[in-house]
Image (cartoon, rainbow, N blue to C red; front, side, top):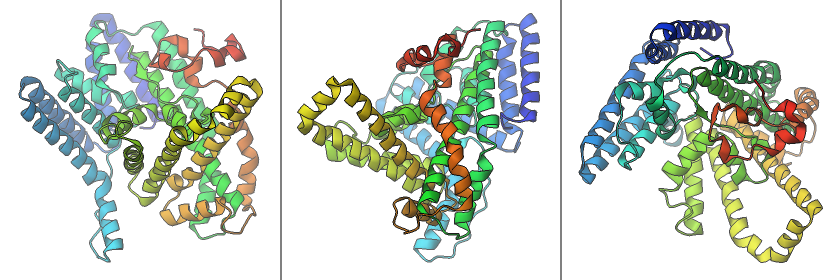
Length: 473
């Protein structure tokens, strides 16, 4: 049930209406209603997979209770290992088994039957939340967990199928203090406003553009010639598609949750304004970046055990992060490219910049040079990210490689396919939006609907464009 659909809007009207009526008589019944609505929402597509979600919730709750009831460090570690293994095994079976069999057939010249498994929607997101909860419990960050709070934390429909990936530290304290589950006009108004902005971004800004992007990738997959302009048109245009689509979903999720008084964390914050790849990953899919940092990069020894260990940790973390996005070698390459970009960024900061002290000081002291350096950093980062996007979007590795080769000028073809020629002029409005306007989170920064907003610089950009771009109820 996609948020940008008539079916979902009908579902939302029923959920809000019943929630309001329940609040008039039973102020605590709203929580149970939201849980029931969330389970219906998940089971709407393939009802049998609702059993999978419920089983995952029950098993993880049992593991958490086992750790909370056991003071022995070794047993707690075993319970953590079992819980993480079960969650990873669930993803491995549904998301990666077919990919592993296909890879084995290719590399080992085997002829094993490839299983046809329908991927349960949102399994990567709710499984990551469960893993995060298990790790937090093992570290002693969870003192108590009530069953229905756990069900709500995992199944709450705004963030169930595509995030943001919410930490227990962000959700459970909210559930502990809510005593009246009633519909409040101001929260409903703010929630509807944020949801509407996200809905507009998806349905009006990017959905009409998407068929042209699909046509360009389809033409390359059919074997048609790919030139340098085609490659850059493909990378830049898809970068806008995935950003406006995914950030719109996050906006809608935040708005939907706040209608019922729940605050979700920020997930996108103008990533294409980033002047370095490190900054990009602090602004792009923020909750996933946090998860990968805390549960992969740091445990692998990143930033603590010397530069070689940091570089290795970056490559492993981002390679696995790419694989998390999709079961295909093109996703692994996309992740490894970002790992390499981040490694180069670390090497530059650790090795090159210290030897350029006078030049760095001169740039910082000159407003004009600072702006030029900032703009150069933004362009370089945007170009690197756009280059990697062709692997993420390509239907297979070979198509992604053809685009990447053309983007580097190695194909010897600098012409533009008619589809790319039609796409290139349409990119300018998107560039103006992502580089010159405040983002949704900045516009709604003072609404009280967004968690972690104070961790980001939010005041200067809306002020630069006037108070009319800062949300007022």
